[in-house]
Every structure is written in structure tokens, then in C-alpha cells.
Amino acid sequence: MSEKENTTREKVEATLDLVRPALQADGGNVELVDVTDDGVVSVRLTGACAGCPMSTMTLKMGIERTLRDRVPEVKRVDSVQG
Image (cartoon, rainbow, N blue to C red):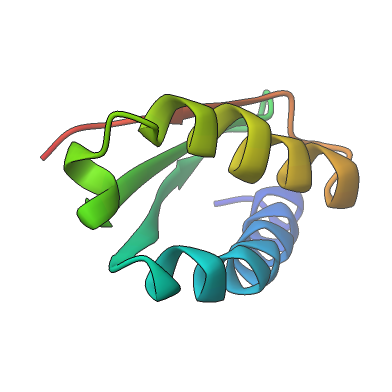
């Protein structure tokens, strides 16, 4: 992993730490899976978030928007299963 990728990953993880309390309050959580060098972040929604009908909104309007605001290198956030 390059130094840039490592720094971006650290920024992403720190930002996810900011959104986790809201997810945990509803019985869910988010797990960082990967950060690519072209700005794609892969996350896994867990707990109540994994099966929630609003998970797409949570992902795009909550997690992705917060990450893109705080970490300019982030271009997109995708959810992975399993």
C-alpha cells in the first residue's frame, strides 16, 4: 500500500468513526473494507443496517456525503455484502 493510500485510508477510518455513533444508536455499524487509489471506498453495513430498507439512503446520503466532504480523495462509496 502506498503512503498516499495509507493516509487516505486513515482519513476515511477517522471519518467513519464520526458517523458510527448514529449507526450504532440504531443497532447497526459500518466496516471499512477497502480504499482504492482512484477514490472508491468499499464498506460493509452490519447489524441492523445490513437488512434495513433505508440502507441505500444511509450509504449515499450519510456515509458517502460525509466522506466526500471530509476526504477530498473519495469519489464514491460502494457497499459490499457478506
